[in-house]
Image 1 (cartoon, one colour):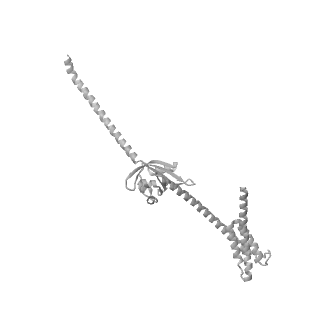
Image 2 (cartoon, rainbow, N blue to C red):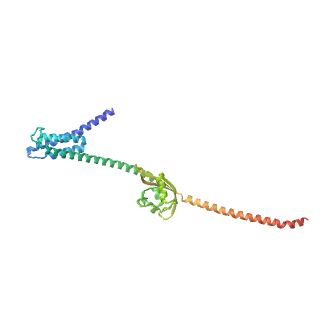
Length: 296
């Protein structure tokens, strides 16, 4: 049932499209014939051209060919001597060739222009859908408190979520369009070339970075980079997420300092124990002879 309805709609669409071609050419031929009584001459050619262009624009290439063929027949039958016959004299052939070529050019231009316009409309609709999808994704990313921002291959920030604003202090208006290395004054243990080489090779990079906030304070973050590629697998953008580990690093440094202090104290205690052992040995040796005399 659904297939028959689809076939019926296709047939109705075809009838409508080709009907536009037939009606437009018929009107183009009828108006000059009616206008002859009012002493209007030589208007048939522009009208036929308009009919062909109208058919090509609204109905497509097939109806445009039909309208072109009908225009040639009607032009030869009604407006070329001898009239009301399809007989063509040798003197009329160049004129008909020029008419056919010019009409074909108009039809071709209309079909190409319509195709380009349709492609542009489809591209615009696709772009609108992509923009809406990206906007929805950006809204979802903006709901999280995690620090997320996107930058292009030149390290220029193109997206800055609310989590990044909460951590670093810059709003999206302040950050977007700025160079991330210059804005954050990033310090990394590895060189930028090494990081980019690993990022291009594996598509991701993880490590610890030291950044500077808007108020000048420094923060240590666990950073994760993900490389986004286009349909041709060419690098397109870098998505970076940062987690503040400043407090954890501070505690690790405190623990490390305490361990170093404990190791230092252990060495000192070991040295004191050795000194006490030496003193005890010396005292016991010095008291051994007097004790023997007392015992005797």
